[in-house]
Length: 349
Ligand code: EPU
Image 1 (cartoon, rainbow, N blue to C red):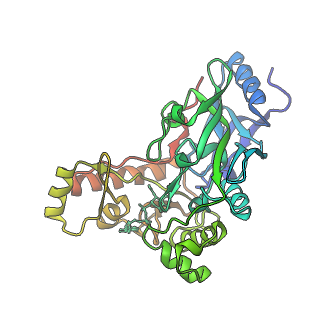
Image 2 (cartoon, rainbow, N blue to C red; image 1 turned 30 degrees about the vertical axis):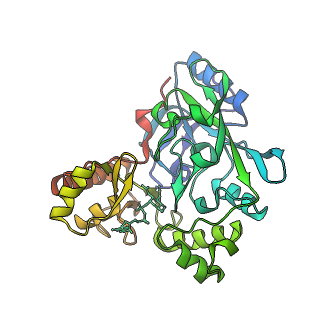
Image 3 (cartoon, helix red, strand yellow; image 1 turned 180 degrees about the horizontal axis):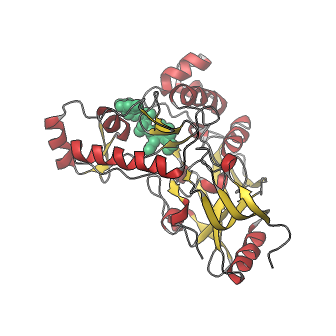
Protein backbone atom coordinates (compact mmCIF):
# COMPACT_ATOMS: atom_id res chain seq x y z
CA UNK A 1 0.00 0.00 0.00
CA UNK A 2 1.27 3.45 -0.88
CA UNK A 3 1.01 6.15 1.84
CA UNK A 4 -2.15 8.26 1.57
CA UNK A 5 -0.06 11.45 1.25
CA UNK A 6 1.40 10.27 -2.07
CA UNK A 7 -0.33 11.63 -5.14
CA UNK A 8 -0.85 9.34 -8.13
CA UNK A 9 -0.29 10.20 -11.81
CA UNK A 10 1.32 13.54 -11.03
CA UNK A 11 1.95 16.06 -13.80
CA UNK A 12 5.41 17.65 -13.79
CA UNK A 13 5.02 19.88 -16.86
CA UNK A 14 5.16 23.03 -14.73
CA UNK A 15 7.74 21.59 -12.38
CA UNK A 16 10.59 21.80 -14.90
CA UNK A 17 11.92 25.02 -16.39
CA UNK A 18 12.10 23.48 -19.88
CA UNK A 19 8.33 22.84 -19.57
CA UNK A 20 8.74 19.38 -21.03
CA UNK A 21 5.68 17.17 -20.57
CA UNK A 22 6.21 14.53 -17.88
CA UNK A 23 4.04 12.40 -15.60
CA UNK A 24 5.23 10.63 -12.49
CA UNK A 25 3.41 7.54 -11.31
CA UNK A 26 3.67 8.90 -7.77
CA UNK A 27 4.64 12.17 -6.12
CA UNK A 28 5.26 13.03 -2.48
CA UNK A 29 6.09 16.35 -0.88
CA UNK A 30 8.44 15.80 2.08
CA UNK A 31 9.22 18.36 4.79
CA UNK A 32 12.59 17.20 6.12
CA UNK A 33 15.37 14.60 6.12
CA UNK A 34 13.44 12.15 8.34
CA UNK A 35 10.48 12.24 5.94
CA UNK A 36 12.85 11.67 2.98
CA UNK A 37 14.24 8.64 4.76
CA UNK A 38 10.73 7.26 5.40
CA UNK A 39 9.67 7.81 1.79
CA UNK A 40 12.80 6.04 0.52
CA UNK A 41 12.15 3.06 2.80
CA UNK A 42 8.56 2.87 1.67
CA UNK A 43 9.50 3.03 -2.03
CA UNK A 44 12.09 0.31 -1.46
CA UNK A 45 9.46 -1.98 0.08
CA UNK A 46 7.27 -1.37 -2.96
CA UNK A 47 10.20 -1.97 -5.36
CA UNK A 48 9.78 1.53 -6.77
CA UNK A 49 12.37 3.87 -8.30
CA UNK A 50 12.77 7.28 -6.65
CA UNK A 51 13.71 10.61 -8.20
CA UNK A 52 14.20 13.89 -6.42
CA UNK A 53 13.09 17.09 -8.08
CA UNK A 54 13.87 20.59 -6.83
CA UNK A 55 12.55 23.38 -9.04
CA UNK A 56 13.49 21.38 -12.13
CA UNK A 57 15.76 24.07 -13.55
CA UNK A 58 18.67 21.79 -14.47
CA UNK A 59 16.94 18.62 -15.60
CA UNK A 60 15.60 17.05 -18.77
CA UNK A 61 12.49 15.05 -17.89
CA UNK A 62 11.26 12.04 -19.89
CA UNK A 63 7.56 11.71 -20.70
CA UNK A 64 6.99 9.23 -17.87
CA UNK A 65 8.81 8.56 -14.61
CA UNK A 66 7.71 5.14 -13.48
CA UNK A 67 8.15 5.51 -9.77
CA UNK A 68 8.08 8.09 -7.00
CA UNK A 69 9.16 11.70 -7.40
CA UNK A 70 10.04 13.50 -4.20
CA UNK A 71 9.68 17.24 -3.73
CA UNK A 72 11.40 18.85 -0.75
CA UNK A 73 9.46 21.56 1.02
CA UNK A 74 11.84 22.64 3.82
CA UNK A 75 11.99 26.42 3.34
CA UNK A 76 13.65 27.35 6.62
CA UNK A 77 16.66 29.64 6.88
CA UNK A 78 18.26 29.36 10.34
CA UNK A 79 21.22 31.31 11.67
CA UNK A 80 23.55 28.78 13.34
CA UNK A 81 26.35 31.13 14.45
CA UNK A 82 27.02 34.86 14.27
CA UNK A 83 30.22 36.36 15.64
CA UNK A 84 29.61 39.81 14.18
CA UNK A 85 31.98 39.31 11.27
CA UNK A 86 30.99 35.88 10.06
CA UNK A 87 27.55 34.34 9.94
CA UNK A 88 26.81 30.70 9.44
CA UNK A 89 23.37 29.68 8.30
CA UNK A 90 21.48 26.56 7.36
CA UNK A 91 18.98 26.69 4.50
CA UNK A 92 16.49 23.91 3.79
CA UNK A 93 16.61 22.20 0.40
CA UNK A 94 13.24 23.70 -0.57
CA UNK A 95 14.35 27.34 -0.23
CA UNK A 96 14.29 29.16 -3.59
CA UNK A 97 17.98 29.92 -4.28
CA UNK A 98 17.48 33.53 -5.33
CA UNK A 99 15.41 34.20 -2.17
CA UNK A 100 18.37 33.03 -0.10
CA UNK A 101 20.75 35.28 -2.07
CA UNK A 102 18.44 38.24 -1.40
CA UNK A 103 18.01 37.28 2.26
CA UNK A 104 21.81 37.47 2.63
CA UNK A 105 22.23 40.70 0.63
CA UNK A 106 19.48 42.47 2.58
CA UNK A 107 21.44 41.73 5.76
CA UNK A 108 24.69 43.05 4.26
CA UNK A 109 26.23 39.58 3.99
CA UNK A 110 28.86 38.79 1.35
CA UNK A 111 29.48 35.43 -0.29
CA UNK A 112 26.67 34.61 -2.71
CA UNK A 113 25.80 38.00 -4.26
CA UNK A 114 27.15 37.13 -7.75
CA UNK A 115 24.96 34.02 -7.76
CA UNK A 116 21.77 36.13 -7.89
CA UNK A 117 18.91 34.96 -10.09
CA UNK A 118 20.32 31.49 -10.71
CA UNK A 119 17.13 29.46 -11.08
CA UNK A 120 16.51 26.53 -8.78
CA UNK A 121 16.38 25.47 -5.15
CA UNK A 122 18.98 25.37 -2.39
CA UNK A 123 18.96 21.55 -2.50
CA UNK A 124 20.09 21.56 -6.13
CA UNK A 125 22.82 24.19 -5.60
CA UNK A 126 25.57 21.87 -4.28
CA UNK A 127 24.74 19.13 -6.78
CA UNK A 128 26.10 21.13 -9.70
CA UNK A 129 28.12 23.54 -7.55
CA UNK A 130 26.33 26.51 -9.06
CA UNK A 131 28.56 29.31 -10.27
CA UNK A 132 28.40 32.61 -12.10
CA UNK A 133 30.34 35.85 -12.56
CA UNK A 134 33.44 34.68 -10.74
CA UNK A 135 31.71 33.05 -7.75
CA UNK A 136 30.93 29.43 -6.91
CA UNK A 137 28.84 27.86 -4.19
CA UNK A 138 31.87 25.81 -3.06
CA UNK A 139 33.55 28.97 -1.72
CA UNK A 140 30.84 29.59 0.91
CA UNK A 141 29.39 26.12 1.44
CA UNK A 142 30.62 24.62 4.72
CA UNK A 143 28.45 21.56 5.11
CA UNK A 144 25.70 19.65 3.34
CA UNK A 145 23.03 17.58 5.06
CA UNK A 146 22.00 14.61 2.95
CA UNK A 147 20.18 11.32 3.24
CA UNK A 148 22.17 8.25 2.26
CA UNK A 149 19.76 6.58 -0.13
CA UNK A 150 20.98 3.07 0.61
CA UNK A 151 21.00 3.13 4.42
CA UNK A 152 18.37 5.84 4.89
CA UNK A 153 20.66 7.57 7.40
CA UNK A 154 20.91 11.36 7.62
CA UNK A 155 24.55 12.48 7.31
CA UNK A 156 26.35 15.81 7.63
CA UNK A 157 29.08 16.12 4.99
CA UNK A 158 31.76 18.77 5.53
CA UNK A 159 32.63 20.79 2.41
CA UNK A 160 35.87 18.84 1.93
CA UNK A 161 33.85 15.62 1.60
CA UNK A 162 31.51 17.07 -1.04
CA UNK A 163 34.00 16.73 -3.93
CA UNK A 164 33.15 20.10 -5.48
CA UNK A 165 34.47 20.85 -8.97
CA UNK A 166 33.40 23.00 -11.91
CA UNK A 167 29.61 22.42 -12.12
CA UNK A 168 30.26 19.14 -10.36
CA UNK A 169 30.18 17.48 -6.96
CA UNK A 170 30.01 14.16 -5.24
CA UNK A 171 26.19 14.51 -5.23
CA UNK A 172 26.19 14.73 -9.01
CA UNK A 173 28.72 11.95 -9.53
CA UNK A 174 26.95 9.69 -7.02
CA UNK A 175 23.40 10.76 -7.81
CA UNK A 176 21.91 7.44 -6.79
CA UNK A 177 23.53 7.65 -3.38
CA UNK A 178 22.26 10.97 -1.95
CA UNK A 179 19.30 13.26 -1.37
CA UNK A 180 20.45 16.74 -0.32
CA UNK A 181 18.18 18.07 2.43
CA UNK A 182 19.94 21.24 3.70
CA UNK A 183 23.02 23.38 3.04
CA UNK A 184 25.17 25.36 5.51
CA UNK A 185 26.82 28.52 4.23
CA UNK A 186 29.35 30.88 5.79
CA UNK A 187 28.84 34.53 4.87
CA UNK A 188 30.86 37.63 5.79
CA UNK A 189 29.83 41.12 6.93
CA UNK A 190 33.04 42.64 5.63
CA UNK A 191 33.77 41.97 2.00
CA UNK A 192 34.40 43.48 -1.36
CA UNK A 193 32.47 43.22 -4.58
CA UNK A 194 33.91 40.81 -7.16
CA UNK A 195 33.78 42.73 -10.43
CA UNK A 196 36.56 41.11 -12.46
CA UNK A 197 34.23 39.06 -14.71
CA UNK A 198 33.69 40.84 -18.05
CA UNK A 199 30.68 43.16 -17.95
CA UNK A 200 30.20 43.17 -14.16
CA UNK A 201 31.93 46.50 -13.36
CA UNK A 202 30.05 48.12 -16.27
CA UNK A 203 26.63 46.90 -15.15
CA UNK A 204 27.34 47.97 -11.54
CA UNK A 205 28.03 51.51 -12.76
CA UNK A 206 25.03 51.50 -15.06
CA UNK A 207 22.43 50.02 -12.69
CA UNK A 208 23.61 51.37 -9.33
CA UNK A 209 25.85 54.28 -10.30
CA UNK A 210 28.73 52.66 -8.38
CA UNK A 211 32.11 53.03 -10.10
CA UNK A 212 34.39 51.61 -7.41
CA UNK A 213 34.05 48.02 -6.25
CA UNK A 214 34.96 49.10 -2.70
CA UNK A 215 31.81 51.26 -2.56
CA UNK A 216 29.40 48.51 -3.58
CA UNK A 217 27.12 46.68 -1.14
CA UNK A 218 26.00 43.06 -1.51
CA UNK A 219 22.59 44.41 -2.57
CA UNK A 220 24.20 46.57 -5.28
CA UNK A 221 25.80 43.41 -6.63
CA UNK A 222 22.58 41.39 -6.48
CA UNK A 223 20.65 44.06 -8.41
CA UNK A 224 23.45 44.45 -10.97
CA UNK A 225 23.92 40.72 -11.57
CA UNK A 226 20.14 40.31 -11.80
CA UNK A 227 20.04 42.98 -14.53
CA UNK A 228 22.98 41.39 -16.35
CA UNK A 229 21.41 37.94 -16.34
CA UNK A 230 18.03 39.34 -17.46
CA UNK A 231 19.75 40.98 -20.40
CA UNK A 232 21.77 37.95 -21.51
CA UNK A 233 19.74 34.89 -20.62
CA UNK A 234 16.18 34.08 -21.67
CA UNK A 235 13.66 34.06 -18.79
CA UNK A 236 12.46 30.44 -18.40
CA UNK A 237 8.95 31.78 -17.60
CA UNK A 238 8.83 33.35 -21.06
CA UNK A 239 11.00 30.97 -23.11
CA UNK A 240 11.46 27.64 -21.28
CA UNK A 241 15.12 26.65 -20.85
CA UNK A 242 17.55 25.05 -18.39
CA UNK A 243 20.31 27.68 -18.46
CA UNK A 244 23.63 26.56 -19.91
CA UNK A 245 23.01 23.24 -21.65
CA UNK A 246 26.73 22.40 -21.87
CA UNK A 247 29.74 22.91 -19.62
CA UNK A 248 32.65 24.97 -20.88
CA UNK A 249 35.15 22.30 -22.02
CA UNK A 250 38.69 22.26 -20.67
CA UNK A 251 41.48 21.25 -23.10
CA UNK A 252 45.25 20.94 -22.72
CA UNK A 253 47.44 23.97 -23.47
CA UNK A 254 48.86 22.15 -26.50
CA UNK A 255 45.36 21.48 -27.84
CA UNK A 256 44.42 25.13 -27.26
CA UNK A 257 47.50 26.32 -29.17
CA UNK A 258 46.67 24.11 -32.12
CA UNK A 259 43.07 25.42 -32.07
CA UNK A 260 44.46 28.98 -32.06
CA UNK A 261 46.48 28.21 -35.20
CA UNK A 262 43.26 27.39 -37.04
CA UNK A 263 40.95 29.90 -35.31
CA UNK A 264 42.98 32.90 -34.12
CA UNK A 265 40.08 34.44 -32.13
CA UNK A 266 39.15 31.33 -30.12
CA UNK A 267 38.57 32.50 -26.51
CA UNK A 268 40.31 30.56 -23.74
CA UNK A 269 40.93 31.02 -20.03
CA UNK A 270 43.87 29.35 -18.30
CA UNK A 271 42.71 27.17 -15.39
CA UNK A 272 44.57 24.61 -13.22
CA UNK A 273 43.72 21.69 -15.48
CA UNK A 274 44.43 23.40 -18.84
CA UNK A 275 42.53 25.99 -20.86
CA UNK A 276 38.77 26.50 -20.47
CA UNK A 277 37.06 27.16 -23.80
CA UNK A 278 33.75 28.95 -24.30
CA UNK A 279 31.13 26.38 -25.29
CA UNK A 280 28.87 29.26 -26.40
CA UNK A 281 31.54 30.50 -28.81
CA UNK A 282 32.11 27.02 -30.28
CA UNK A 283 28.36 26.47 -30.73
CA UNK A 284 27.83 29.91 -32.23
CA UNK A 285 30.67 29.34 -34.71
CA UNK A 286 28.93 26.16 -35.86
CA UNK A 287 25.94 28.34 -36.79
CA UNK A 288 23.48 27.23 -34.11
CA UNK A 289 22.74 30.50 -32.30
CA UNK A 290 19.10 31.55 -32.75
CA UNK A 291 18.31 28.46 -34.80
CA UNK A 292 14.91 26.81 -34.40
CA UNK A 293 14.11 23.21 -35.16
CA UNK A 294 10.39 22.61 -34.71
CA UNK A 295 9.53 22.75 -31.02
CA UNK A 296 13.11 23.32 -29.82
CA UNK A 297 16.06 25.55 -30.62
CA UNK A 298 19.03 27.62 -29.49
CA UNK A 299 18.45 31.01 -27.81
CA UNK A 300 19.04 34.16 -29.88
CA UNK A 301 20.74 35.87 -26.96
CA UNK A 302 23.05 33.04 -25.83
CA UNK A 303 24.27 30.05 -27.83
CA UNK A 304 24.72 27.92 -24.70
CA UNK A 305 21.01 27.94 -23.88
CA UNK A 306 18.71 25.43 -25.55
CA UNK A 307 15.06 26.44 -25.54
CA UNK A 308 11.68 24.73 -25.79
CA UNK A 309 9.18 26.72 -27.87
CA UNK A 310 6.34 24.42 -26.79
CA UNK A 311 4.78 21.20 -28.01
CA UNK A 312 8.02 19.20 -27.85
CA UNK A 313 9.24 16.29 -25.74
CA UNK A 314 12.62 15.46 -24.20
CA UNK A 315 13.76 13.41 -27.19
CA UNK A 316 13.36 16.44 -29.51
CA UNK A 317 15.61 18.50 -27.26
CA UNK A 318 18.16 15.74 -26.73
CA UNK A 319 18.37 15.07 -30.48
CA UNK A 320 19.21 18.76 -30.99
CA UNK A 321 21.81 18.59 -28.22
CA UNK A 322 23.46 15.51 -29.78
CA UNK A 323 23.57 17.26 -33.19
CA UNK A 324 25.18 20.35 -31.65
CA UNK A 325 27.77 18.16 -29.92
CA UNK A 326 28.50 16.34 -33.19
CA UNK A 327 29.02 19.57 -35.14
CA UNK A 328 31.35 21.04 -32.48
CA UNK A 329 33.33 17.79 -32.43
CA UNK A 330 33.56 17.72 -36.20
CA UNK A 331 34.60 21.37 -36.61
CA UNK A 332 36.84 21.84 -33.56
CA UNK A 333 37.62 18.31 -32.35
CA UNK A 334 36.23 19.28 -28.93
CA UNK A 335 33.75 17.16 -26.95
CA UNK A 336 30.97 19.01 -25.13
CA UNK A 337 29.52 17.69 -21.89
CA UNK A 338 25.84 18.20 -21.09
CA UNK A 339 25.08 20.18 -17.92
CA UNK A 340 21.41 19.34 -17.14
CA UNK A 341 20.76 15.90 -15.75
CA UNK A 342 18.59 13.47 -17.71
CA UNK A 343 16.33 12.11 -15.02
CA UNK A 344 15.65 8.65 -16.40
CA UNK A 345 19.33 7.83 -16.10
CA UNK A 346 19.37 8.28 -12.32
CA UNK A 347 17.50 7.66 -9.15
CA UNK A 348 16.53 4.00 -9.19
CA UNK A 349 17.15 2.39 -5.85
N1 EPU B 1 29.73 33.81 -26.22
C1 EPU B 1 29.50 33.57 -27.56
N2 EPU B 1 28.22 33.44 -27.98
C2 EPU B 1 27.16 33.56 -27.15
C3 EPU B 1 27.40 33.83 -25.78
C4 EPU B 1 28.70 33.94 -25.34
O1 EPU B 1 30.43 33.46 -28.35
O2 EPU B 1 26.03 33.41 -27.62
C5 EPU B 1 31.13 33.89 -25.75
C6 EPU B 1 31.62 35.30 -25.62
O3 EPU B 1 32.96 35.32 -26.04
C7 EPU B 1 31.54 35.57 -24.14
C8 EPU B 1 31.88 34.20 -23.58
O4 EPU B 1 31.25 33.29 -24.49
O5 EPU B 1 32.45 36.52 -23.72
C9 EPU B 1 31.38 33.94 -22.19
O6 EPU B 1 29.97 34.14 -22.12
P1 EPU B 1 29.23 34.31 -20.72
O7 EPU B 1 29.84 35.42 -19.95
O8 EPU B 1 27.75 34.38 -20.94
O9 EPU B 1 29.62 32.99 -19.94
P2 EPU B 1 29.54 31.45 -20.30
O10 EPU B 1 30.88 30.87 -20.10
O11 EPU B 1 28.89 31.20 -21.63
C10 EPU B 1 29.08 30.74 -17.85
C11 EPU B 1 28.13 29.86 -17.11
C12 EPU B 1 26.80 30.57 -16.91
C13 EPU B 1 27.05 31.86 -16.15
C14 EPU B 1 28.02 32.72 -16.94
C15 EPU B 1 28.43 33.97 -16.19
C16 EPU B 1 28.79 27.60 -17.66
C17 EPU B 1 28.44 26.35 -18.40
N3 EPU B 1 27.94 28.61 -17.82
O12 EPU B 1 28.55 30.92 -19.16
O13 EPU B 1 26.00 29.74 -16.10
O14 EPU B 1 25.84 32.58 -15.93
O15 EPU B 1 29.23 31.96 -17.17
O16 EPU B 1 29.25 33.62 -15.15
O17 EPU B 1 29.78 27.63 -16.93
C18 EPU B 1 24.32 28.07 -16.11
O18 EPU B 1 25.14 27.31 -15.61
O19 EPU B 1 23.14 27.70 -16.37
C19 EPU B 1 24.72 29.42 -16.48
C20 EPU B 1 23.91 30.25 -17.13
